[in-house]
Image (cartoon, rainbow, N blue to C red; front, side, top):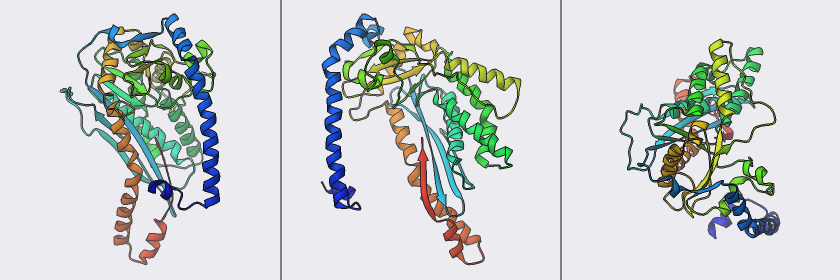
Length: 382
């Protein structure tokens, strides 16, 4: 109760009362929608069974326990009086042991970039692109049997396209940034890593993505389910522990996929075309390992989707890494997520260290240093 009171301590009493009242109204509305799914649960299950889409993991057998790894990233833009203090990082975390990966794993298992940038509302767009490049670099080099990525496998293409368009726009205005420079330097390697992950052609390696939030409704559109809920929400209510849906093609966008290149080159064009081809051949499946976990949305390459042996390994890894009640995602992704979320809380300490060094170097009034390094707002993302 004390925490609730502290939550509202800075708000006017009348505003708090109105917000609580409206929250109760929203609860009533949401419960009506929830009951709609509850009433139709058996009918929805029958649709999946009759179409041959609903299966059980036990039917795939019990392959040896795979090694696993989770990769996630985040960025922070702290807006100061004089400049923006920009940080982005990505981490790779090994799953629960045993089993532990015995093959050589290149260190460090993280990537980080910190640099000041001029004030610009689009700085975050560039940082997201660099963050995705870092994540895919770590994922492509992890030696584990299964590498879990956070978010959709289509998101990096969207983020990089937005970032490159902004960089080229800035370059036309003769604006150069450190993060833009780093993004272009890493771009070719990013395309190679992206292609490797999208194809997953190695039989001893699985790269899959587990987005927590999605608006896609491949099954909902197939069976004309209500558009009030996405597939993951509906399937969480109707799937039993150990059940999964067979992989189906990922929903295609209305416009074809596109990626702007930061510079010309036949090799880049070829890589870009292969990446887009890989995205057009992605599949999605859903799996509920235990009753204490929501359904996982799993995006994967066609080479995984069309091979039951590889799916068996994937589900075995997911089940083993999700055995702790209270953790709503595979363990290595959960730990990686917690780590990168703390990046924002670390930035003030980094800024203070930089401020102290500036004060040591400055010969004039150090008050000017503290004013210029005063933080006004912090923006972050993942």
